[in-house]
Length: 116
Image (cartoon, rainbow, N blue to C red):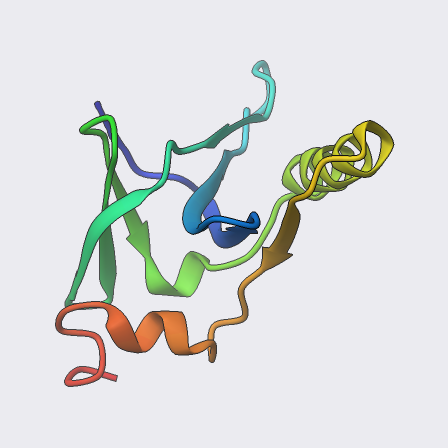
C-alpha cells in the first residue's frame, strides 16, 4: 500500500536490543469523515527528492511524506500520548521519542542533505 498523509512525524522506538524508526501518519477526515492515523511497521529504507520523503516500511508499504507537512494532528498527539501511557502502565522496557526535524536521523536519508 502507498500512503500520503496530511501530517506525519518520525517516532523513535528504543528497546534494550534495538532502535526502530517509524512513521506516525495522520489524515484529516473533513466535514463528514473522521480523522485517521497509522503507525507503520518500521522504516526499512528512505529517500528524499523535491521536498518529498519516501519511507519504505518493513511490510512493503510506502509512505510519501511532504516535508512541509511534518507535524502532528490533534488525534496523532492523543494517540502518541496513549501509547506512551500504555508502555509505562505495562512496565515495558521501551521508550518512544518524537524526532525533531533537525535530528541526525534525517542526515541518513538518501538525497536529503544535498537538497536542503
